Image (cartoon, rainbow over all chains, first blue to last red; front, side, top):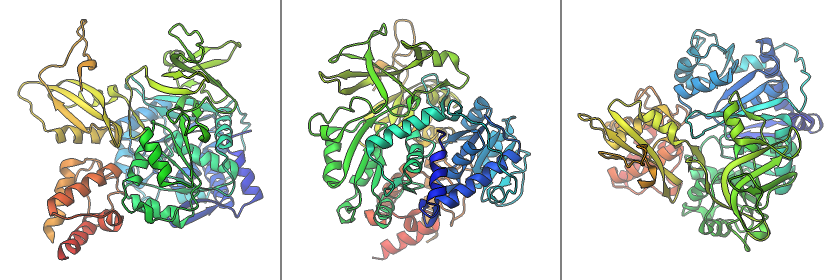
Length: 510
Length: 83
């Protein structure tokens, strides 16, 4: 079973079923499949081969979805990149992955110029809605519309489910994003497991407000394609009222969100005036909901079932709380999911009984193959299991279990911050801060925030003679980092607290 | 109301550098389409407009037609202040 075969089957069996709605545009399974096949043929005509990485640097739009399925049909590995990514990081991602194709939009031209100029492996640039024919970093871009007119015949490659389907980059403590390698089997297994426990159906209408570059958003596309549902793609959360209007207009039945999304919607005084009778399911992951938030969501959407879940990119999803447990143990994220085993281990890796605190370990077909070309970091997370050849994922998250084995999140082993449900690597932010002239030392921490979960705070020591406003610092960060990584708060100090060995101690910072 | 566009353009230049081209965007250009402000940025922009112009912006008024370009903001503020 390959990841794109569900999609292809629905295109054959129910070609007129609506697959995707983006603003006013409606696309059937048949039409999307046709576009994906044309784009796949175009990629091959431009020398993209089996196993090549195809980077997709787009906001949520039909072209991003077409790009995903096109790459898979061509036997390539799709790499979704957050649309907020700035030039330096894009350069890093393209070089680290050795991507040979890049699908993007003309509004990103400035960023593309800088990144593609420094990415020697890029062989083809496919641009949506180009304004002119000007080359980008010396390369002649292929208009997306022209690619769809490709008359080349698609050569279906001999892909098997052991082959990589995607590389999804995730931030880490070292400051260098790591490419999570997932095979067709990994993704099919995860999508099957999740859509099963959620009970997704072909008559569901799923609203996706989450970026496709985020596995949570990506899987709305994949799971929708599995069950033959309709996906409504939302490009931005900037206007919550528009999100609600879309939910009403399109009779949305499923709303996947992160706590920040729910805060935004629940803060609207006019929420009660929207007729959301079709909404039957609400899901949350990426960051934990407080008990108050859970109660507020259930009160605001009484007709919908809430699924509180937990996962990490390295295995897509780990666990969900069966809704009938919300009244019993609302703070738990469950005991795993279908076709997966989870347990806690102590510092020595020994398995712990229920009622313990330890690191969560996951085994299952959804566990990644490793980090792309990062064997050392892979070895820190994937460790041999009981059966030869099987690797278990050590999540780096600390959980406790109750007497019945239900999981409760305790904390992370590393210092990753979760803001707006997105991972923020303090090191990545500190690296950018050190790029500011006059910054002597920088320490980035997470501080509690009602709406964001955690807010990013930067503590800076400046060299003498230098002075900056908070805003100066934040603006610099926005130019180099995704917006959710830029500090919300900046504080200046003469000296940072240190450990005995002279390293900066973040323990003393608030 | 030229000063609304000028004021907001300056506010955006001072507080966001989402579009790496800095403040080089047209009055009619969508902030969203041109990656100038993101969703959190719009919340900050609304707070700024409310405090700077002494107005209250309702939930239903937080829509692209009112906020997603300098020209739109200009028209929106003029209408609010005319009340």
